[in-house]
Image 1 (tube, rainbow, N blue to C red):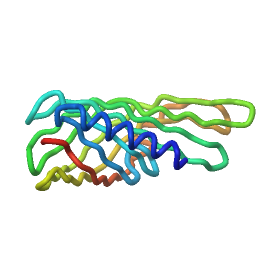
Image 2 (cartoon, rainbow, N blue to C red):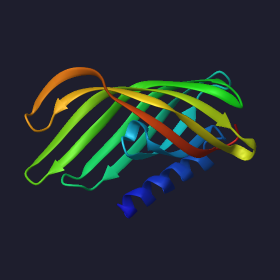
Image 3 (spheres, one colour):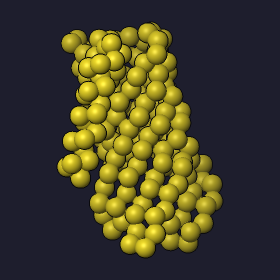
Image 4 (cartoon, rainbow, N blue to C red):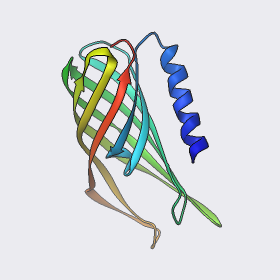
Length: 159
């Protein structure tokens, strides 16, 4: 897990240094990763800002799981901003004789505070549309089955 986390951080840091100061990197507790996630965003435009978010989480429990986050986001505001995101969260569970995966529609609704020097804070909710039952191997849609709060801290390069 340490190697995976280190590799992800190095990738995001390397990309952020070379991306002409339009990248942000941050960690999030709960939120779209369900437990935690390491994330990178790239903003195509300035305020209001449209961009993409890529994130990942790894946990080794009874079934090791990798969760990835793929969102299109919109940030309205500068120092005090509202962030909306929509996309999918993938969930891959590794079992001894089988690999199971699911793609879950997900969203983010966040307040974002951009401090001086590039540091920022974000907090809000991350609704996820899910209904996959791993025990019975069935899929039944249960709207807003997971409505996780999320809190994140990170650094923006040149915002």
